[in-house]
Amino acid sequence: MAALAIFGTLMGSVLGIRFRFLILLPIIIFGSVVLITISIMQGDGLWHMISSIAVFASFLQLGYAFTAFRRYASTVTRRRTLVVAREPEAPLKATG
Image (cartoon, rainbow, N blue to C red):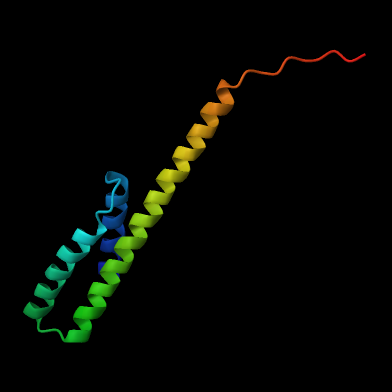
């Protein structure tokens, strides 16, 4: 299960970097079919299939969300830096 969680997180991270739209649903469906097939071939029970699909889907979504948030945060920071760099300095007013 740990390997499945790591794989799901890394795959979600790659999808979060590469795609800007919701790609998770087709990947979760495809991954579920693959995990069910592997579980049937290994002779695992129903609860093992369900738990492996839940772990995969959860960590896939977590990896995607964290990567998408990181990309959004870096974009906002970059824009703020550019705006601050472009603002002209206010002239000094003489008092008195």
